[in-house]
Figure 1: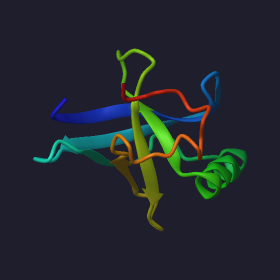
Figure 2 (figure 1 turned 180 degrees about the vertical axis):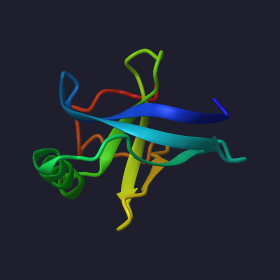
Figure 3 (figure 1 turned 135 degrees about the vertical axis):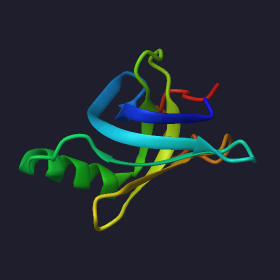
Length: 112
């Protein structure tokens, strides 16, 4: 996928079997010449108070999500998410080997 503009889901996985939360996002992604994937976007819907608290908690705990596109299987691209004060999300692919299994041994393998 060289470029995608549309909706996707950000999924936060506690372990290989438990997805704690999914967030719909409007996203534009590109692939750099080095082959690394990155995107910008926003939440597709305004988060209510409980959703915002959950989002903030997950972002503070560990800002790594799987981004899943419509029509794709359950695998995704493992990304680090940064949120600007204006609500803009920046998603940066986590390179293979850039994630320590010791930090999160139960995470599913998203980029085999």
